Image (cartoon, rainbow, N blue to C red; front, top):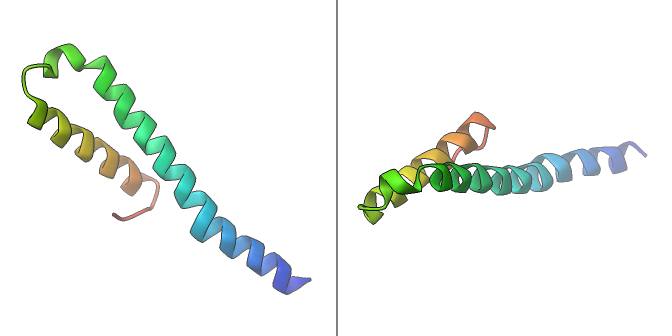
Length: 66
């Protein structure tokens, strides 16, 4: 029984939690981009850089280093 609980805990920590964080951070970064689309419409390169910055910042806040 203890091995099963440890297995479930490891699955949650190394598989489920990071995958949920990736999805949430992607949504957060995209939402920020939508809210600021007018200001960034002139410079696509800057928009991509800002998206990447916000995405990685979110992952780090959730304890996932990328």
